Image 1 (tube, helix red, strand yellow):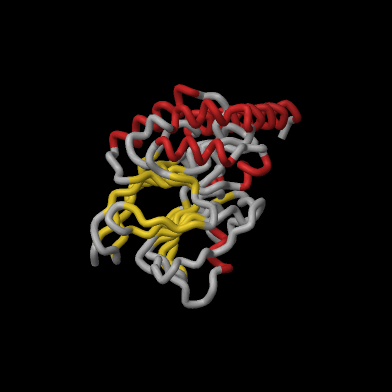
Image 2 (tube, one colour):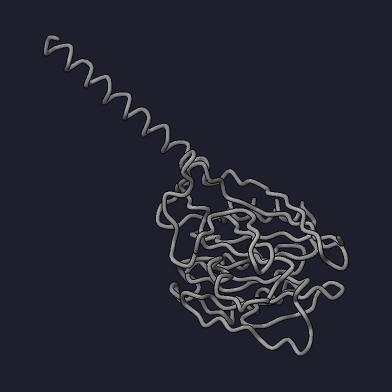
Length: 265
């Protein structure tokens, strides 16, 4: 085959590669703000509860996006919102993020993530803000809410010191455990079960490939990427998060709000 034809083939292949890369980049940038509402139903509780979980905002100053997210949360009319860590990775953005979060029209209960610590966020400020919604920041504490639902929040396993509190005879076997890193469930004592564990941290991998899944996961993820898992400690839900880390880019992994219905059964 003549050299000119080889050159033309190589040029066409290079052009196609550039177009493909550009298309993937375009899709990734668009997808990073196309919020998906995931819905799941968990049985085994003493009454019905309607819970929204949000996670890993990694807020960097995009007020319009976060306000849109909060509007979506409010339209779901939850009893409570569970915020499973990493509001921001830079404490400069924390006050603005909290002011927007305070527009959630129900109590917001949260736990810290690794970036709360690594970014220097003031956890007392976070707690004060969540209390203004009627909720609280739970660090190794359990509270009883909404007709007796037990909600237990633990410190982050990478940057904090998670410790299971004594629950003074109250059982959380039909309650909710909130912890930032899903891998923590593999360290729980044998026989300890929860009605549901909520976590985030993984961003769902942020970039996923067909038939392969997440390209990479951060430390603390364990074997859990995203979605619902059945574990020896009860069901675990791993939220894909709302923000991005390192690069403002997602691929086949849209940001997520989880609407969780708990019911008797």
